[in-house]
Image (cartoon, rainbow, N blue to C red; front, top):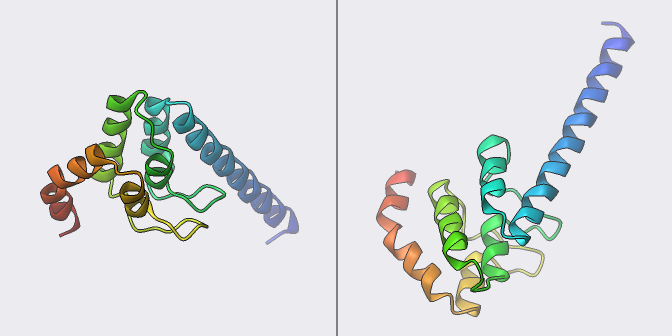
Length: 127
């Protein structure tokens, strides 16, 4: 194969990595700003529900770590969406904490209730 082909292939891979990085940044920025519809579109489109930011935190970990009661109904809907998409609660961030740790630390009773209510459905997704 000619060198030109391999050069183009490397360029395409580099562009894809750059686009993925930008999409990842857009996802976590959208979540920080309470723009859960945009975050949902990004996950449905091309990002994994268990993707990680620079702190190695997944979307559900970030939501549980930085939980606030503002826009709570939309936030809970988004957490439910993540759970239905098989978000893992046990992926550790750079601080050695995962979503379940932050749920306990922040006493997120509504999130615990949401996980409990959807437990049967979540189990059926795995089996």
